[in-house]
Image (cartoon, rainbow, N blue to C red; front, side):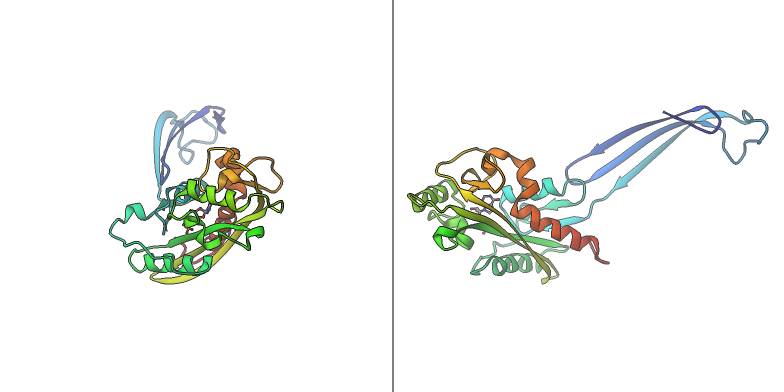
Amino acid sequence: MNTNFMGLDESVFPGEYRDCDGAIGARLVVRPFHARQNARQNDQYAGMGFGIELAVGMQILPRLILATRNAHKTAEIRAMLAGEYEVLDMGAFPECPEIQETGVTFLENALLKAEGVSRRVNGWVLSDDSGLEVDALGGSPGVWSSSYGGQEGDHARNNTRLLREMQGIRERSARFCCTMVLAKEGQERAHFSGTVEGRIIESLCGEQGFGYDPLFVPDGYGKTFGELGGDIKNRLSHRARALAKVVAYLTGLPDSP
Ligand code: IMP
């Protein structure tokens, strides 16, 4: 409740509807209708009545299209950009063919995905190529993280193989890496990377997150990403670090989404 210059109460009843992709805000303002311009200086109640002003604002969020069908990546990126960007992924473009990830680096694969999708889809496209590098395994599984266990996207098999390869190894340092490419009209506009250092533990712990999360303890923590949950992971992950750079870049662009 605010008190205006006439000593009368002005009530503002904010009512806001939001969903994960956009925001519509409505504000109901009830204020003494003294019409400041019309009020006579020496007769402060002159012309006073009560009026209702309904202000409805629509906020259309800028759109980012993720070049991924990995629902976990989409969920993390959407949570990190909540209220700032509308985030779509390839689920919204079923006609867009699968991009073959034939690169041998995160950047090569991220480029293939972002440029490939943005040739077919209008707007800003963001790709994420990511994986786990384990020092004792010479950087494996690296760009092949997704199929390490023999079958693309089979996280249980990937983790089983990782635990097998790490049996008896004491040096367990590792990092998650993420490279993101922003593209428009088939061409890369910029790329960014983020990493998070940590170590591989000896058995699965925690059920949150995805992929190697139940085996990865980030430096400075005593729990895996699988135990820490989204709020913490999304503050310090490889993906969060790359995405912060993407947002900073887009914010300064004249043709930002
Ligand atoms: P991409 O889809 O080719 O980028 O492969 C990503 C793969 O890396 C995933 O399937 C996981 O195996 C692994 N990975 C990437 N990011 C994460 C993460 O945040 N947590 C756990 N595993 C991840």
